[in-house]
Length: 631
Image 1 (spheres, rainbow, N blue to C red):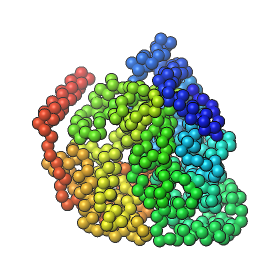
Image 2: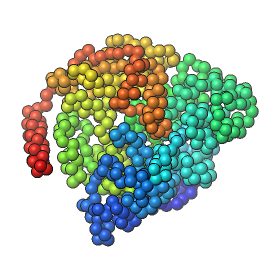
Image 3: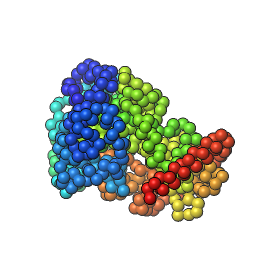
Image 4: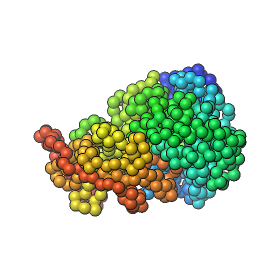
């Protein structure tokens, strides 16, 4: 199931993509057959399947349940504690991957095997022919990619638990990777593998600046990580230029492997280069700084889909017109798909799922374009999920325009597992569907019966930003998060915004009327139920925006990392509940503003109210019956 090919051979790679996507259905059946043939004897699957007669697709779907992390957590924990891997996998579990999501405040643990690294290496290699198809000459220079690792945690069994990217970068697959002329990095492996993220960041930027004339592309995994690097560069460029000017490296870089590898690249003093870089960085505005520092760069490679989309305007400000490229869709649980049109507008990014990576199924979810659905979604979630399971579909049977939650069965011991990602089908490439990442399931704010999703919040904030910040204030919204403040009655939404003047680094000048308009604009863009609660029920108070000082979200990231988040996988939480995180945010507030008017709301038609009345009564009766039967 893992084809081999030379990633330097673009034609062969594109042909392989054609074969995979053209035969998606047959490959999916083969993937499931291989998984069941290997693992039907595991303790987990034996509880549902009855020997050889059940090693088929239909029995698997009829008998193996769709599960969440809490359902499989006990099995994974037993492996972490020292029991045999054959609880879930015939192949030995060689490590546990920590998900960026959490369960009860702790990272989720996902099983992985040595063979899975082969699959990931194949996946990365498939990105090369796609980029070569759209961008010429990538073999004539280097990529300045900022890559980081996080220290592992040793479980009682001796297995290491670590983020998926740390796993890959520390593996022999990465360290001893065969030469690929299309993927040469400015960062030596020693700087990527440095445990100290600050030293790693400094050394990687220094190497990228020294080799600026060879850099053809720049990037990081997530947009947030890349922008953090830009901010780091802004804070340290004088020190970096001093090192280039003298051909030495600052004394606080104490990692000997980093020092030695960087010194070999510096190759002595370079006064002219240092002066050129310092001149660009000393300009009053950093607009277009990426193109100015790396003039041969052809694009910026970062993930800007999902919650990362809010970084697009800031990236565009710094990039100077360079395309923003999101190449892949992956997670700790599984690597899913690649963007076959990498130079498209960030808002149009869709990922084509590779059918040999895992067995994929899809739970239909409510159409996000209909406000009435949000009202209906106040019903019992478990009943809703059970209805959707009856409608679960295979990879090739999804419908264009519909929303689904992805469910995976992997070679590593996850069976019909709900990843929690909501995707929208945008089309097909041959027989393989293409998806736009929409949001994480159940990432919401809620005060009363309202449920605001990450996507809803992003859209509302984006509109407020576009309509009221860019003109005449010329402010950049560099970061945001939210909080449901229930300390008062009624409770209200709080948004924490970090604002920066577009053309300087001075503290932002906050205009009361402008900020109040932003508050009202956000409320106007939120969904039907929220506006009903604000307008008619009076169960939600006016929305508040608290502007925090520059650098606050860097402190928030540092706090999250100290609590166990991965530097490499860190994404700013769009809703914070941790007391420590809220303390950091509230301690840095420089201005607080409230919506001065109630958002517009009109009741649904009588037919709709009647539907929802009958629906909710039915749910209530059913719940009473279930309680009675359980007694």
